[in-house]
Image (cartoon, rainbow, N blue to C red; front, side):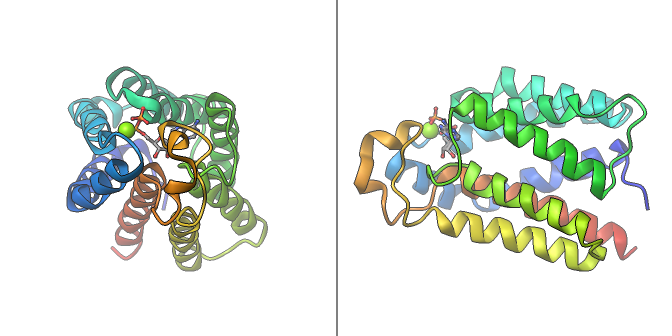
Length: 214
Ligand code: ADP
Ligand code: MG
């Protein structure tokens, strides 16, 4: 089945729910090695998206992703606002008004989005950030496309990759963002932005799974 922006309100609701369910855990993570505001920033951004959901659902993917990025950029604040904003705006740049999202176009668009996010954060794999989830997921999407993976396998593979990405941040020393000030003392804690990135990815996949089984 084709996944059109008609499903965006469902994705947004699922993401809001998973962040709410995990808000205490994520806040504790950002309190341990940051300033504790990550969930509040993200929830502000998500509430803004929810208000725009009916409108977003009528757009092309190109226009919707751009609007999502601009909205997050303008409403979230924090380092994560500019990074998530950049991710979505850049994803839209790889699409045209006519583009549909299949595994190939999603992998291409996500890959460009992640590259631009790296540039924006002057960061890469191993700095204990959201990129430790986003980069492995980008690579997994590419691999899945090349292997023509079945949808069932794909969903499990992507969510497992995101979970492994979060876990990989535990023993890293933060070298980017606010946490970098704490250096070695960041060891032993998961990164908050990596955790929310994983929660978002796995929540979207769960919605896709339910659509597939309908
Ligand atoms: P702030 O750090 O400004 O308080 P948030 O708390 O909302 O912003 O977001 C913090 C998250 O942003 C971190 O957990 C990390 O994942 C991500 N982050 C911060 N700086 C960078 C960077 N330079 N590159 C990539 N991700 C970053
Ligand atoms: Mg913070």
